[in-house]
Image (tube, rainbow, N blue to C red; front, side, top):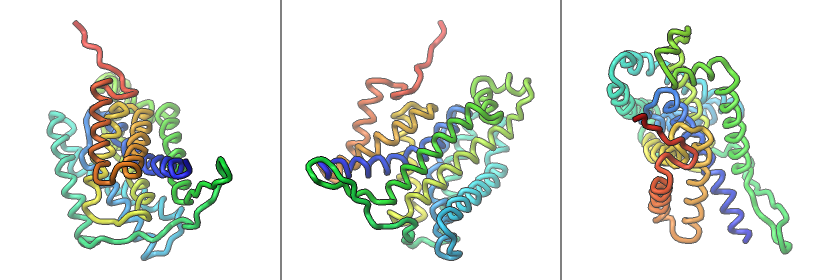
Length: 296
């Protein structure tokens, strides 16, 4: 039983990182009604920037998180102005293709700066496990890494929800998602809102990269698989739904961990996509997604 609970906590920690990246997908889709294929690569970029700030400058964990978020957001800001903004007044497919090309641009930037070698991220938290009493005199070992990951991701998710509902920018993003022309007539600066959407998504991905880094190797190709899994989480929860992205990410992380424990790590991706197919057969719009109403 203790092994199951420990695996469950580890799965929630892993799923929280998926959820953080998936929130970026959902923010972009809910505002712009399109995907962002380069989201996983900004996760990779955040991990590399965090690695540099930690190893080269010796900054504490708090400054590593802040610095990686800000620098990744600045990169997104520059690339958005160069590659995305000229596409805003063109068909949506043009912008979607631009995000596909951005994958390779970000990967090559990372490869030029940090090289193609796999790098190890130093521990950012205490590695000493915390033992918590459990049923029958047994104890559950929880690592501070898992607790910090769950806590930071939960705090960011709550902050994002409040931002979307309580701030002028968040309300403007909702207005743009509903009717871009009407929002423009009401004085909303559409270009500014779109830019803010991409920057928020990049910031979330960067934090996820720094959180994931200490437990895994860092390489310029790491963004592809993580981006795919985060998009899977977003689709499973309901594309465009922020609570759905959170739920989908956690379900995905728990499913992978339990499959690795009780079946095999070789089949965890297969099990994940089987669950996705089952969810989509049951609810094509995702668990918390809203079904589209077609007017006759």
